[in-house]
Length: 107
Length: 121
Image (cartoon, each protein chain N blue to C red):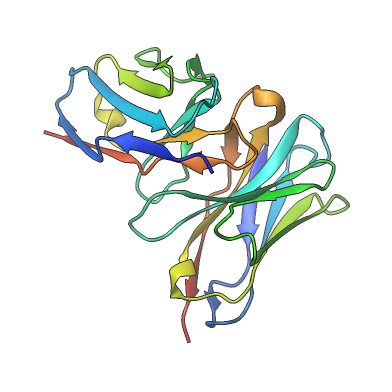
């Protein structure tokens, strides 16, 4: 099975900061990676799919990129609404996997 | 607007079978454009993929759960279901159902609100 290693597990940042979250796949997953945002007590919300395509309605401050098997979610200028937990998910193989999650906290 | 709603018992005894249903409204579960999945989240922990069912009825399951999981679909009711047998306290989690675009056109774009299932005697 493909493993997804997400880092950091916790990130402290301030409003206006640029932040980056990384997911590394244990093998090639082509571009089949999605990013989700989850707030407490809520279902995850799809932000980005196929590495870099923004879901409709997602602000342009969110972006995704990749280099080989390393995938990155970047928030260009943190807003108060962005403090949440973020997960990556690979869907290259028929056996999907999620990263462990990154909790983005207010510094 | 597509909506998914999980339903089922909130409390299951150890060694018994957990059964949940996801009712889809605002769209057809039979479309070849999508497949349907179950994901769970133990309290305070991360997301764990359980499995998918495709419009053809074929399924894929998490390797670690495969021996205990069955996902099925009832197109006449626009529902799909999860059964997880021989549950233990480690299966206590919020269970989500979700829709996934087929062919990589998107990912899990619609989710249910989730339902908490507690395994306890």
